[in-house]
Length: 73
Image 1 (cartoon, one colour):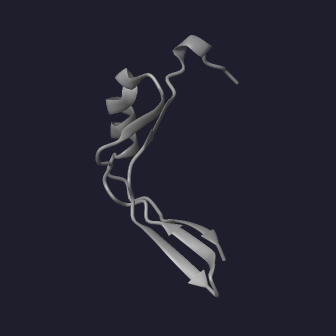
Image 2: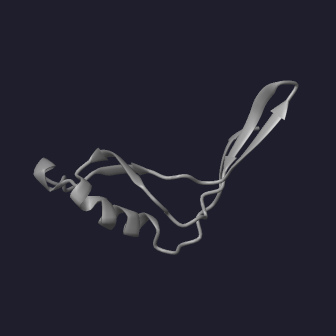
């Protein structure tokens, strides 16, 4: 396995708002579904080089159909 040189790694972490479906039973959150099919809009940089943010957003928002992510039962 070939490991990239640490200087060649371009890690960018960003966040943006997405729709979330939250199920509550008896006052407790039992399931959270993140609907990750919306286009990336107004991303904000969390970590990394801001110069790579446009490239990272383009890679994350390339038109592929993403599944929803579900946590809980």
